[in-house]
Length: 456
Image (tube, rainbow, N blue to C red; front, side):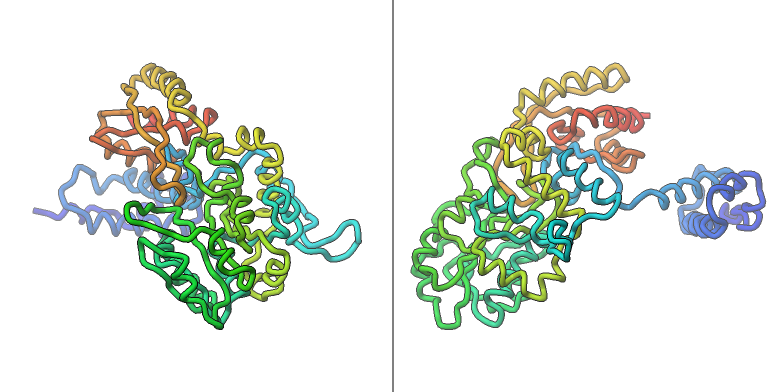
């Protein structure tokens, strides 16, 4: 029997044919040739005897057009997050408030006074732009913004404990995502990691016993992405501050950047940045793109002499942020001056505050829109997640939209993920689940169109 792959036309023959003329008009010949060669190679390596007619020139034109379209799409494609994970690290964590987007766009379109003092008429500093707001919101003496929280920890320890000892509880040597671990971050700072206590119990006496003339700092890490229960014990920031009595800096890594009382968000008690400083922390580090709800950034607040020393560290320049981050962060922080406005306008906070009843009303209306398009769905109770390594055990009651198929849930998930508008959802018990907590009302139309296309 003849091998059907013998029917694959040559590149020159296909390029000369009518099916490829429109492709050559909108894409370079080099790109079309490379895509065609890749398509032909895949067909030659593929199974023999399929339904495709390998002599059909339109087959190659279609496959090449699809490949070129994928290449032309931005790799950082917008995604509709229907998973219910509010701070989805793989999807960029916190969506920005409109005020932050507007501020970012304003400085992106032209020049800005990033490092220029307009009043004095001379060079200024980029580090002043968010400092005053952070001082007001946290009660800190001073503040510094770098590119993420890991950078903030590295810079703090490199400045305060480079070449000397930093004490960390064994129960706080967490892995913070993508295999990055606190122990490795401490070592990269140039500080010598000294582990104290045990995994489940670290007493104040353990810190006291570990203090030597080489000790330069104590690092207290918030276990934001896991929970230890049972026979456990840990020293608080206030206890550490009382033990140290100002002889050494206590650095508290809060991670999530909580500026408001968590009860306002329906979350369990956890120290805010102001709480940590009031308890005696000399420096507090946090993320800008977690519960704070702003852009990716590392924020350090605390005692002015320590912040000043960090600014003078040459490493600070390598970790600095650009004008876009500062503009978005400043606009986000400004919303916190009026807490009710922050709760209403910062998407992360707004999503966290939604109740199951709030979501159920929207979900029921969306199911009716699906029914009008011939797609069956039902309501199902469930839980959303905070995400972003924050509140690992917190359950956010929600109301889910469940689709049982056809097509099967796995195929529907694939079609939605690879569609023109990418949609990410959950699968459980052979049902595709959509959580409108993380879909804004303005996105519902796009979600509906994506679901209709996935069912065609």
